Amino acid sequence: MNDLTRIKYFNDIFEIFSSKEDGHFTFWADYNEGSVYWSRDMMEYYGFPAQIVAEKGALDFYKSRIHPEDLPAYEEQVDDMFSNRSEWMHSTYRILNKDNVYVTCTTDAKLFRGSEGKPIFFAGKVINHEVSEIIDPVTGLYNRTKLLTQMTKYENAKRAYYLMIIGIRNFVSVNDTFGYRMGNKVLKEIATYARGLRLDGHVFRVEGTKFGFILKADRHSKEDLTNIYRRFQAFLENDLIVDGKKITLNICGGAVRAKEPYLEHNPILNSALYAISKAKEQNLTTLLFDEEENEQDERHLMKTLSAIRKDMIGEQRNFHLEYQPIVGANDGSTTGMEALLRWSSEEIGNVPPSEFIPWLEKDGRFYELGNWIIRQAIRDASDIVKARPDFMLNINIAYPQIQREEFVDDVVRIIEEENFPPKNIKFELTERCKLLNMEMLRNKMISLKSMDAMVALDDFGTGYSALDLLINLPVDQIKIDRSFVFDIQEDLQKQSLLRAITNCAKELGKTVCIEGIEDDDLAIYLSKNFYVSHFQGFYYSKPMVINDVINWIEKH
Image 1: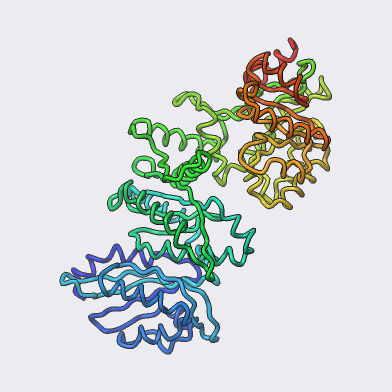
Image 2: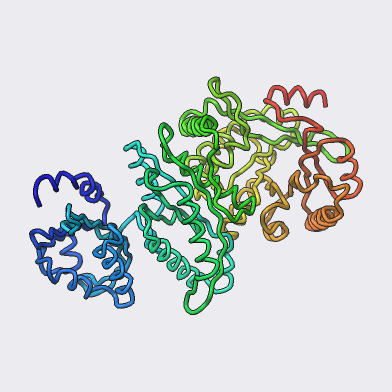
């Protein structure tokens, strides 16, 4: 290989060898010299006879150590490269190590061709799943850690790209019907199909049943992503067969285009996750792009979300809390208030909570902000509780908070440090807690209640199996979502459902708070026809800062 050729391919070669993660073994083949070079660690781990071997025979030797069930797929990818159908190889397989034990590995490599189109150089790495921290052990795909690393590389290189995330809606039915072992086999089959798409990009298992795709913006368009999504959709609906069983799955998807000057990886990932959550909520079967057609609006959105996240991981200077009063359904007396997160800055102004809270809750750093909310709400309510010993402070808890192992300990610590009576706190959990392990969730709620705090299920009646949560979780109250009572006076179906839910709550000894009360007629109708203990809504008061709340309570 002459110097010009080496320089031409230097950047690509450097990218391949830049990784230093444990469990990564590098190799390269020089077809001009006729030699294959394995790293010393690779030679020792797999028990290869030498570090440098003749190129002829090296591939056959390597294939002889691959598990027979995995060999056809491996050979197909090798054939694709040397037949010029693909320049990249990404293959997961089992191979014998020096102890003659099969271990799962993934080869990531690129074939370089000279000016005449002949192979001249082959370089890559073998990733050992047994020790690698960037490979998902179930599917063999790169995991979320590697996804963020790859996004950071694009960010540092100031290179635009698309991030698409595809999620499976009904995967729980596979586990419920066939068991988790079969579920893992299905995930492996899906991963195999995703790799087989031969994309000029990267595929990841982001979390659970969500798969991520990074595609370079200078080589792909929105139409390309839509076509990939449709192919993925058609495969899962029509062609997925595992152990002789036809599995039919439905998907939803979200995508975002990352480009200068807004390439920060966390806001980009959260935007894609937010897009897929909106697609799921709206029951969309098409790919949803989280970007505005208006370029100025799009830039403003990314600037806003980036500023909010930086504030979240900093000193929370632009966050503040507002509070909406909660009243008794019988007499309208003030019984408590709900703490609501708000954000504003001098440069951007007020940002509606619906625009940033769902997005923010998907960020790993939200936990610290959640602790700040608890502490600040307790401080704001302290004087009110001293004057009104039965006053309740409602604090929202997002499902990423409660799943943290240290959550209950941190709550206890904050309450003790602020010297606040836990009996005056009611933690509101959204129905998205259904996504969590039910036993873990139940234990966390029991721990909260053991300190005399109360627990409510917020947004009750939306999204998931509401009555199942009510029966199986130790909640004190359910909060009926405003969408559930909209136009209820004219909707017989809503009336029947609400009557069933509130009667069930009454029989189980739970209180009921209905949100979204906009006028006196609705309040009177609900209190006369249903079991309800509390009301909340703009008819009584909009959310206010704490000083205004104190004045409001004195007048009411």
